[in-house]
Image (tube, rainbow, N blue to C red; front, side, top):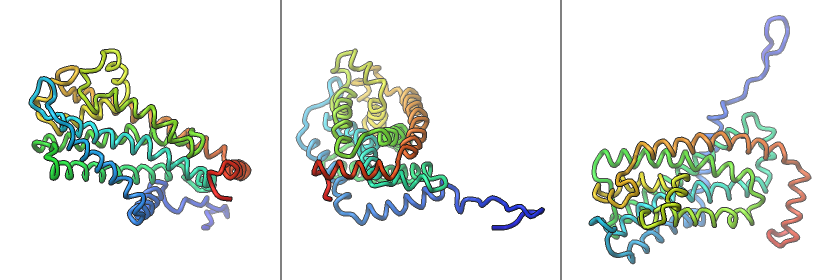
Length: 297
């Protein structure tokens, strides 16, 4: 520690900014993911499911000459991003909280922001990698949809980016409040599956009641799916949209709003969860899990 003029000691600065610490931590977690075949196989399963769906869906989108399989694949691509942010991420956070990760972060300068950056990096790479694999595999194996030009590729890029910014902070906020890993999946899966079927991701949204369409428009999945359809499907498919157009400005507006809401919720909730952590709480949860048979003693 250096002494300042007058004999007073200067405060020690953090060894690295929290964003750099977060990126370094995220890189470590990415290497761990790539070396773990079990975790990688979970992402490949989503691509296999999409291929099976595309192989069995037939017919055309009503009012257009677009294959129904293409609409389903575009919607499934949006759901893939959605579920990685709102199912996979909360499960990771809850599991690590149970293992004492948040307790350790209390003693780490910039711990919560760095931790959130690391998780965002991990989830974004997982989501983009899975989406790229999905688009490539369906295009090569089942004649799936592809962007038609540079403008469509640009739309695919910004919709994917905004979509992840909309759901990843929400997933982090959920992970901070969910009770434990054993209940997390059950509490999240039912609402997300409900959104899958009410957001026009697996069939034209115009086939749903107007009230359901209006409710789905509040949540990001509907707009993520609509934005990806605009990038992957021909313009003639707009006839199957509720407004008869892709409404890309509204897609950007809604996803940006959810991104802001998510970031405003995530860091305070994670900090609150970290403040509430203690050695006694961690021990009590472990004993409860042992008694229930969820983990070994």
